[in-house]
Length: 174
Image (cartoon, rainbow, N blue to C red):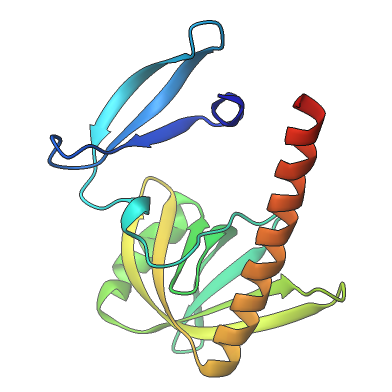
């Protein structure tokens, strides 16, 4: 139950349900060990089906999308995995992506990730537009072996950081 107190939503899966359900967590009742959920929604795909770990950055990471050396979109990196990236942006930037027919072409994504030695590494890679949901642009990344290694190192570093925070929280409560 302590995990649900800091979450805003959850995913439900069962053999009798055809698709995974996403639901907002409205209330956590520790006494009865129950959750009150609302805004239930069937998903076409789910985080459970992902092949890799998706991490939210600890700090704001500025991200840019270019098409043929022309800046189309800028935003803040919301989460990243080895194969995808989600950027929070503005409606005007999304409109520029749509007008450029970006869904059928390779884009160049560029952003900087922190490293374990408190340095910054720049990532520039090909990306394709997967989806746009509200003001979030979801991209499929096409990484070279070198950029894949850099992204993996960042994911590993952030996972270790999150696990350390979880361990500290559990030790305090236990």
